Image (cartoon, rainbow, N blue to C red):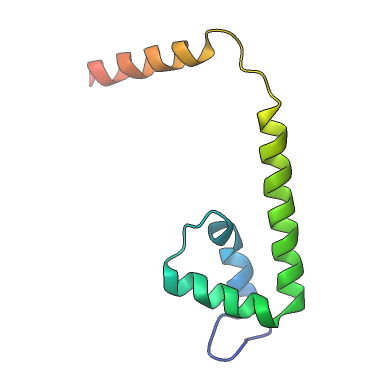
Length: 85
């Protein structure tokens, strides 16, 4: 386990990569992740993989055609659930 200064270890950094990619970390946590990634080649490589994976998934999702009427059906069901609660 590698620890950069007083920051996160490799395992702590890797556990936070998904949240970091999603921008769901606090500013302080994000800075700790960034500091580790600047110093640790292994974690930086894992981060690049995560980014490439997210981009690939987003690109593939954009190519999926939503069946006609699906959005309206989902919204109608959500409205019905809200009205019954």
